Image 1 (cartoon, protein in one colour):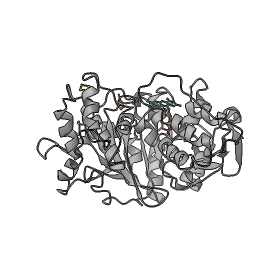
Image 2 (cartoon, helix red, strand yellow; image 1 turned 90 degrees about the horizontal axis):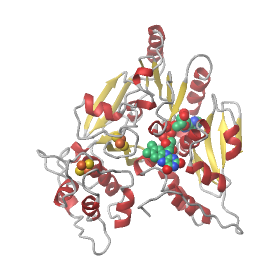
Image 3 (tube, rainbow, N blue to C red; image 1 turned 120 degrees about the vertical axis):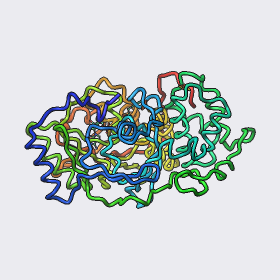
Image 4 (spheres, helix red, strand yellow; image 1 turned 180 degrees about the vertical axis):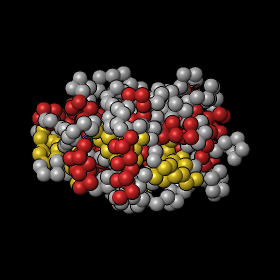
Length: 432
Ligand SMILES: Cc1cc2nc3c(=O)[nH]c(=O)nc-3n(C[C@H](O)[C@H](O)[C@H](O)COP(=O)(O)OP(=O)(O)OC[C@H]3O[C@@H](n4cnc5c(N)ncnc54)[C@H](O)[C@@H]3O)c2cc1C
Ligand code: FES
Ligand code: FES
């Protein structure tokens, strides 16, 4: 269960106490903080020196008693741990809201986030949310273990798209497992919010619900408390049990950390969405975890062709960018369609294309869809250190030593007019 940051706590390398104290001394000296600040269901929380190996799921359940968020596979595969998160958009100062698998989400990465769990949507005392009521009305819950994840997942969809089609609803449940109901009543309940003609929609119900957090009319968006935390808190640096967490905010800081920790005895890991921990659970142990999600430069994108995407861009955002640019190349819509079959919605929301390629790099046997389709598309990745940058094709990327290096971006060319570009995934699937 506790596969925090891809390693069992018991396997953490132990460093001397003096070393940990040095880290904490650095915290005091530099413009960094050992305190993590975030909101859960409208309440601000501060965690002093959080455990770099703890997941958001462990913290919610064991430290806050928010056991509505369940845990089962610990691999990003069943969806019962899904929560909704809202945080500043690193590219434009707006906000981003989406669902994540809390079982894979490191607690240390939620600084400045607003998190909504099923308890934040509604309950017996505060009154149930329309999605919760609808699930019960359609007999979509038996043992109830999967239900909170189903509800929050639907809430995430309606927040992003208040009028989804039935097909969009079905596609959005690609990462949820129910062992009791046979799915039909769950999907019937969720599709009843769809906007297609013929569905038993009553989406206005949403606006009749009063938010249990702020007493306001619910608009389906997770806005409760999003402005309550300081988004420009100093970068996080904390250390426990011989494992340190660093949250650099600039490429310069990131390069310095890489230089510092890629030599000597440290075993470092860059952390983006941390979803690889759901696939390769025995990687590590690591002494040093460096968050790349907090580095704005890694989100830079450039409309194509070639389409250029920074390495912290999630698979979900890459799909959006490819769809937006689909008039520039027929291959872009094909790539987008294929990427929608990679993992599931909540994994794609935080999982980066770069993390996927690094999984292939570290574990050559990994059947990476991203690697295969990007090789077919003739994509190139730019890899760098503070001093050198190199742009290479996918096959040459696999041959590069990556110690101390960073994937910076990928460029995806348009297909030639004479080319027909098609990809397919060999697996049985019920979604389109
Ligand atoms: C349930 C599930 C189903 C999946 N199904 C599929 C599938 O069908 N097809 C498929 O292809 N994949 C699949 N995946 C893999 C998924 O796409 C990856 O887990 C995800 O893309 C990894 O991205 P991340 O940001 O979470 O990486 P992380 O877990 O954060 O990191 C993974 C590795 O990449 C390194 N890294 C991250 N960013 C950088 C960077 N900028 N530079 C250098 N190194 C970096 C890290 O150090 C780490 O070693 C699945 C995963 C899960 C959990
Ligand atoms: S516990 Fe199964 S996806 Fe998180
Ligand atoms: S109702 Fe039991 S797992 Fe879904």
